[in-house]
Image 1 (cartoon, rainbow, N blue to C red):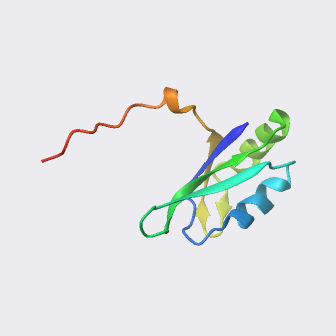
Image 2 (tube, rainbow, N blue to C red):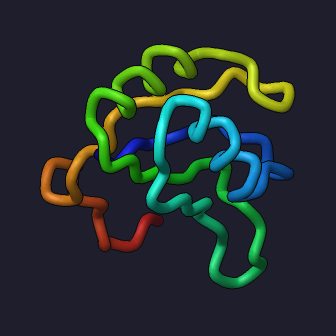
Length: 92
């Protein structure tokens, strides 16, 4: 299951996230999204857990909990097709 993790402190590393989620089971990948120009974290990331029951346990246990000073948001990631399209029109 792909898990969205939001409201992350900018100082959090992929190893920090892997450690937190590995308490609930195997994590196959961890990615923190960063700005492609500055390299600065955007404050959210994704954790992939192959076992759905372990992933559900992690979501229930970690959602709205303090992590490195901020309450994080943890839920099942939505597939790209299920998200609203961002407008490409220029804003004036």
